Image 1: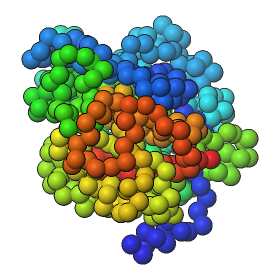
Image 2 (image 1 turned 90 degrees about the vertical axis):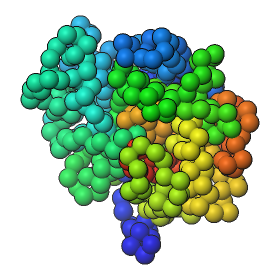
Image 3 (image 1 turned 30 degrees about the vertical axis):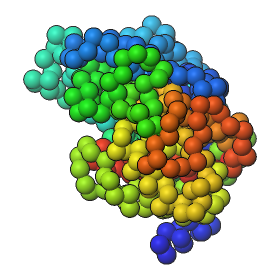
Length: 415
């Protein structure tokens, strides 16, 4: 760990979060989402899963209304926005909100602003939408601008623009890459985050993998992370984006900081394409690297937002990784899973759960895990069940463990 310790202890300029934009099942702004998460309000409801479903009704965290983008940050008229594909809308609206929140709505031409979009299976989503509209792109794919190219053009972002795909950790990898660009001096600011949509194919695929909950009684009770009666996750959709800047640049602009992206850790299980690895070593390694990168000891962590989606194997494996990484501090550090309220936003999950961490840091309260009626003995952690808990929160860690073994931990620190 010597190299990691040196990096964590080096005199680096902090990277701050100066803008936040959210469209989610529990709210369409940072204040709305924070209010809902701390009130324990579920956004999971009954939906029509589409033409490929085995069941006529399934439960999911669906976005019911996507607000038009902030007019100062985005040139699109409401009618033009309404005509965009849903995936585009779930990016455009929160990106515009993040830029406006950061005070960069009118200054973009004079700054190198990068864009890192966390999104998996982009072309499959486009081909599916075309197929369901009686198109044939899936049989004869055509070349077209990618979503990240369309977004960079729409917002006039002249820094580098790329997409990261790391399954459920995609938007967290986007945040990590944007931080690296800032530390290297390649951009003056960077828009980072990710999104995902509910689609008939994804709902059917995860259902057939037996990854989804089969509950059919109460939608709000279906997502049960860490509970002994959990039977799979509930899918969600939405987008969450941030503006990242070096602390000095933000101060020079007089920008408000919501928090600091203080540490990043990554690893790969190199194990299985869809089944969680039962050995917690590599997931724990990602957490340990993130803490070292932030210069934070395990006993200084005030909250962990767990990846915990509600799968029997995955939740237990993560509990083992948290215990291995935090050691004796695991008995003290509170842990919760906000997927119990939002569902699993897949590509957008890591970014949305960073929003939950910012809520804890700015509101000094811990969001709960809903439906944790009977904590599984295999998930022996300091849980926050049912309702929020007031707490002094200075440092929060957020785990995202994607299919294929893509492990990520982000450490956020109060501004």
